[in-house]
Amino acid sequence: MDLPFGVNFIGIGAAAPPTSLSNHDLTALVETSDEWIRTRTGIENRRIATPDLTLTDLATTAAQAALTQADIDPASLDLVILATSTPDDLFGSASVIQARIGAAHAVAFDLTAACSGFIFGLVTASQYLQTGTYKRALVIGADILSRWVDWQDRRTCILFGDGAGAMIIEAAPTLENALLGFELRSDGRLNHHLTLAYQPKPQALAHTQIGQGTYHPIVMNGQEVYRFAVTQVPEVITKTLHRANLTAADIDWLVLHQANQRILDSVAQRLEIPKEKVISNLANYGNTSAASIPLALAESIEKGKIKPGHVIATAGFGAGLTWGAAIFRWGSDFTI
Ligand code: UT7
Image 1 (tube, helix red, strand yellow):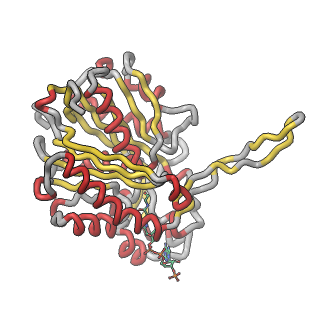
Image 2 (cartoon, protein in one colour):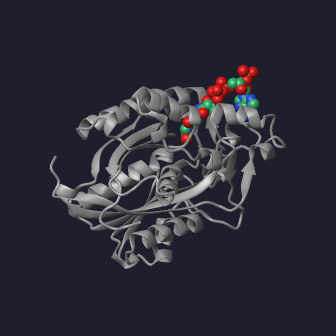
Image 3 (cartoon, protein in one colour):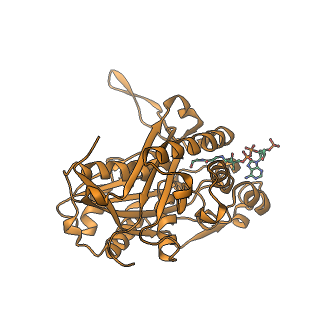
């Protein structure tokens, strides 16, 4: 369908907690080794939020950095989407961020799609802009999974870290549209492979019962999620390339959800994208869920690797199960 507007991606920012947890630190918690974690995942360190640091704090810092880079007034934002599975408040945290950054005219809401959340948020925001409903949007991917990891479970606790990343998207003339293609998917039949599920405890209440409990820590069938990622991610990127009338050779950078270096290598190999074009920062951050893609983008842009005009293929995948890809051109006429 032809939409009346295009979009430009004009600012990015990221934030991570100052506290690090190394592979060596984890050997004191579970039976594992630095060597096992490095060779199976590529992870060396992860950042962990201390109790005083909130999801809203991290997300606000990332959002402010993105606003500064785009050099825009927060009051000009029409939309704020917070992609997270770990809000400070189950009613949503987006509106608190909206207030803290001074986006007085924006509507703000949370979006949950686990590690695919940033891609789902980017596409959702772009739809509002491309239809002409709104002009400027802020999309944040942020998670503090350390609060929901079972630190006795060596199969999962070695993987995750905390962080936030944010992007400013602006409506543009259709001819300048920088969102070249996207595909979003979910398959709830595979939900049980990766969960952070509510566990009700039945309690008597008047003439009935209620189930007041809490969330059970993350449970993951690693092998199944691995298999899913290395087959579905190349497929969804290939479909997205096709939609965008591009080939893998047109891609300047592959920026995947930073889950496991072996997944990154396998997807790149299947797409015949050379290693030099694959962005990876998971050695330092682990899997930061919805934050991982904007965090990796922000670092590479700051280092000058990704430059305005470069074409980026990005894909998220994870719980739901959900997955999706977006191919876009970075930057507009501003200088970084
Ligand atoms: O963002 C959401 C997306 N999530 C993912 O992308 C995760 C995808 N899955 C993975 O990345 C990998 O499956 C893992 C890194 C989680 C696990 O790697 P694996 O190569 O699939 O290991 P495995 O589960 O097949 O386990 C191999 C062995 C087992 O021992 P036995 O049964 O062979 O004796 C495990 O018990 O490694 C053992 N093991 C460990 N050993 C040392 C599992 N975790 C550890 C550990 N340290 N931390």
